[in-house]
Length: 228
Image (cartoon, rainbow, N blue to C red):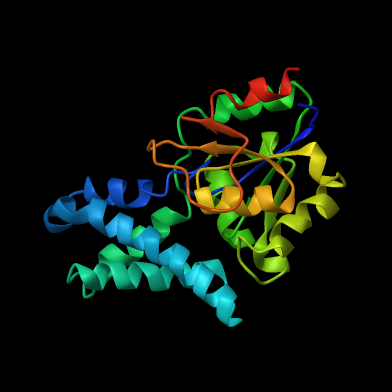
């Protein structure tokens, strides 16, 4: 595969979106939250995605940090935790420093060593993405952080994917796009990127027009796609 640029989605692909709730649940005095944190985290993420799609469709863009807060408020109220403001603030603070998956650092170092250009393309705001990259000590191995904030519409709009060609100064055929979100992979494939779907949960392939070129269980094998 003759490509020289690897572009990663951030949330759920490089960074574990469940990390914030999991960490908070294991802190002292979180007995109630400890029982429900997987459900809270799942609804938080589901609403986060739904709100990006709906805002894109209705032309009512707002930044991803606002969406993240709105989604958390929904999830907390769904579990009757809306009055626990200390918990809310803790979860939001943790979201700025989400943990990367265990294989991320070594995988990115391998790509960098092989001369592959590396970028993040995310719905996240620049401030959120910089926070996650900084807390994960990944700045040295990432060449560009590209946010939808520039075009003010969320993935899977083609306007988002188009940014990569301009900023990375390459063509569609030069790019492998990696995401754990099937809808994101479909959007990127439809735009013309080569794609790798990180199917950590072994889910079925989405019934959409464009399918992933590669399917992997985690990110460890991504450097092998550049070895030929």
